[in-house]
Length: 124
Image 1 (cartoon, helix red, strand yellow):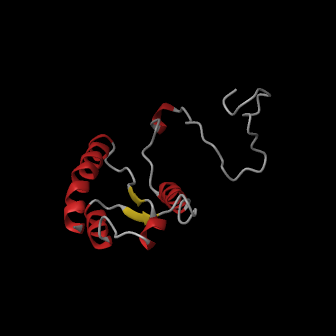
Image 2 (spheres, one colour; image 1 turned 120 degrees about the vertical axis):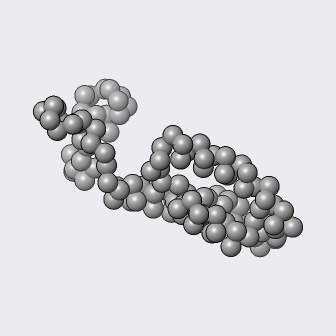
């Protein structure tokens, strides 16, 4: 039963992974299993080994979460942002143009949620 569920899931996952990789070659990918809280009362729909094997093939991380208990929900986000911050970046504007690309210092202590313009919201 687990192998059948896995084979039904993979075409959907593979489709979206292919789409992501086709349009953004170096995109960080995470496979997030939900409903971890149900494992106490139900059989796992897809084996951990199958998920980990597929994740290794596509260079993705995998996580298990439960929205009900809150277990593991923030971890994929925190890990992906940390990995993204460490990843090398392409140059947005060639240095030869003399134009400096805008940057944001996320560690700044004086960041204002309204963008400093006095309006409401972050974009005003």
